[in-house]
Length: 290
Image (tube, rainbow, N blue to C red; front, top):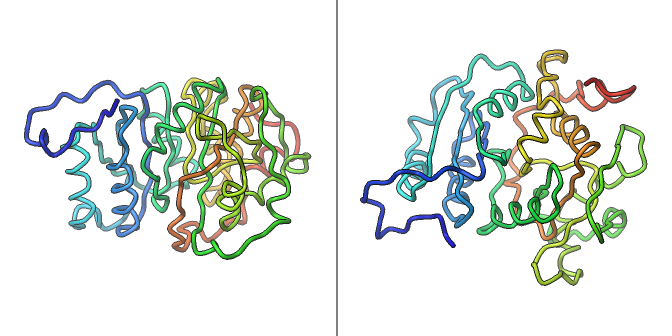
C-alpha cells in the first residue's frame, strides 16, 4: 500500500504518519544533484519515511535553489515529514553522519548520499530485505551507468549470494572477503543482475565488503556499536567512515547487498578529495575500538 499522497490530496491538511525509515541526507554545495535525489525520493511509494536533510553549504545555496525547494514542497505535499537543518562548522563526514543519526527516531535509518538517485520502489525493497533477512545493514550499491558498455568479468568474479541466511561476518583491512569491493565498481552489479535469475521476491542478498551511497541500517544495531561516534578520535578529513561503521554492524548483526541495486551514482566529482586518512585502516589495523 502506498504511503505517498497523490496530487488529488496535496492541498488537504495532513498529519504525517510515524516513520518506518528516517532518510538521512547530508549535503554540501550540490544543488542540481540534490534536486535529482529528492525527485527520486518523491517517487517512492512505501514505506512511510521522514526526510532529514543536513546542509553544510556555506552560502545557504539550498534556500536559493528553486528546483530543490520545489521538490521539498512536493515531498511535504505527499505527506512526508521533511526537516532541513544546517550543520556548521564542518568537522568531517563521520561527524556529519553522527549528527544525522542523533536526529533519528525511526526503527530504520537510510543514509542516502546527495549524488545517488534511488529507483522507484528501492526503499520498499531495502526495507523488505532487512526485515526478511533479520540483519543489521543492507544496501544498494551505487551504479555508474556511463559504464553500461564496460563489462568487467574479473571484477565481478567475487560475487557470492547469501543462500540460507545472512550470518555475522568479521572483516578487517586484510581479511578474505574484502576483495568483494570490486563488485561495486563501474556498473558491475548491473551486469551481474542481467545474468542472474532472481527469486520470486525480485531481489537477492549477496556478500559485501562494504556499501556506500545508499545504506539502510537497523537503527538499534548501528547505535549498539557506537554509530559514527568514532569521529571524535579521528582527523576531520577522514574517509571510509561507512566501512568502519558497517564492519562493526556486520560483525555483530550481519549485512548484505541487494541485487539488483537500483541506486544510480550521478558521477559528479567527490566533495571529499582528500582521502589520505581512512577510518577503516585507523580503527581496524589492530583490534577494533569499541
